[in-house]
Each structure stands twice: as structure tokens, then as C-alpha cells.
Length: 62
Ligand code: SF4
Ligand code: SF4
Image (cartoon, rainbow, N blue to C red; front, side, top):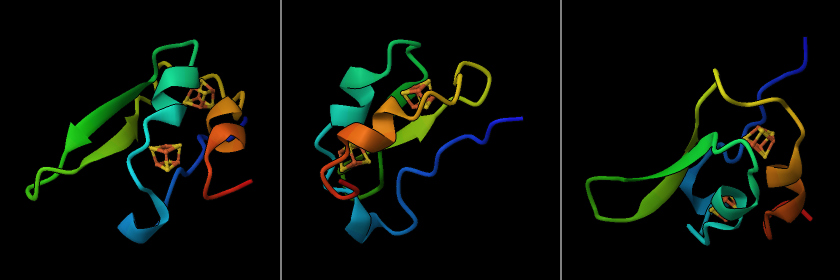
């Protein structure tokens, strides 16, 4: 079975640009605010089809 991508391990690896959220055609990514008010993407495992578009678009990974 294909793996659900890991968008970031640490918050330093995500600037909250929402590119992954915007690219996901399955609507599997939502942006959630942490307690400091910064938004980070969260993947819904039920909706994700492991296409990895979100990883390709992420400025921290390309
Ligand atoms: S791998 Fe594809 S379906 Fe899954 S969250 Fe990323 S863009 Fe969406
Ligand atoms: S594309 Fe990368 S940097 Fe931008 S919100 Fe998604 S995980 Fe964070």
C-alpha cells in the first residue's frame, strides 16, 4: 500500500505557504492553526491517494 506523505517532521520545515493544501485535488489537506496562531497542513488519511503532488509543490522539498 502506498504511504501517506509526511509534509514536515519539524515545524521549521514548513512555512505554512499552503501550496500543498492548494494542490491537493482530493481535498485531503486542511490547514490547522497551532496554539501560536500559525497554520500547518494536516493530511486526512482517508482522503489521501498518495499522489505526492503535495510533496512536489512544497518549497522545502524541491
Ligand atoms: S499525496 Fe496527493 S492526495 Fe495525498 S495529501 Fe498529497 S496531494 Fe493530496
Ligand atoms: S507546501 Fe510545504 S511549506 Fe507549504 S504549507 Fe505545505 S508543507 Fe508547509
